[in-house]
Image 1: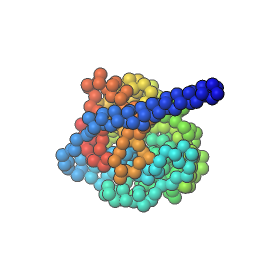
Image 2: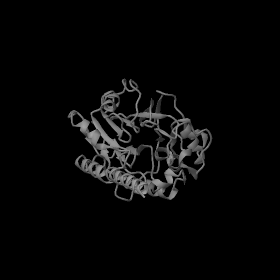
Image 3: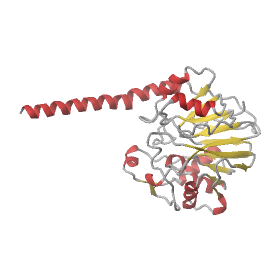
Image 4: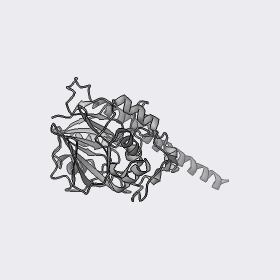
Length: 324
């Protein structure tokens, strides 16, 4: 009887510990993160001339850059399959062409010069091939991204796999892919490459990383650095000059080192935080911080000592000027 009571007591203690941890991870910390998001939320910008270079954040690390009729998109992800449980079970997912068409119509996008992909995990690349096919765009990224494009029915002429550091001219945009690293102690699972055309529906883990890139986009009006994952290679960005940086906030391990090797290295003073939202929720639902993998409190604690940096939280599909 005493053994049973002891085991019951241990079990109860474990349940209490798990309840406390779960409450902190899923309730207390997200609530604190939400308050910080509200405090730094970007204010609506005044109307700008149609030919002004603007950016629109579209959830996760998706960004639309547009100046007049010229536009490109980075890491489009409109489908956002719901729920964490299918992801944990490695369930099947597929782009929703209806959802993608709806969002392109909402954005007023019929043509894009290019769709750029920072790495080939599903939350960055799953929709990219369909977006490129529907907009006549070039799909630009790793060989893994190219295989996602092939699975989406893109012709080979629409696929570009740049060499590290190579500069591409895409309409008025000069684009350079700079080698980087995925964030997180695991190196960004699933790692490896997608070695054959990936035809959906496919499993979450079929969307292998395929290498990670920082993407520098230079336009006659301004330059933008898209850094979607919070890993980095020391020294990789020392020759970069960026007026604005889209900075991924998920899985940051050392905020001070992250700012040093990415933001300071690129001489950027304007930061737009991305990859903080729960990408298992539809873009038509109110966005909220991703639990567990995003800790904005630690990042903002570090940013308090950096008054030289202008840090903003973007509002979904609210265009703002990129120009300095």
